[in-house]
Length: 106
Image (tube, rainbow, N blue to C red; front, side, top):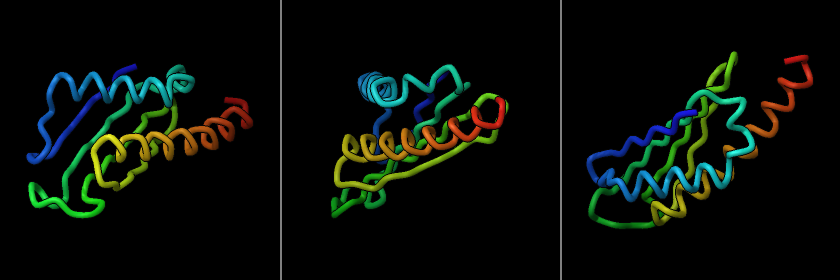
């Protein structure tokens, strides 16, 4: 299972950020890894260096084996909070999606 991180030009995609994202994804979504082929995480800063309310966005797309990809996004005031929020949303989405898939004999 592969975890891919993408950032916009306002967020530096460092090795430490990659490690933190992988840690959070594993912490929140590890129980789904056997059903997934890849997770893509996209981080963006809507206001650039200007700051502002909830201008950090984390979008997560999970590629389900033999199924369509599913995606969520979350906006918050920090990158860390945006990642946490998106992970929570993805966990909820995968709970429902995988349960439906398992219920149909998959």
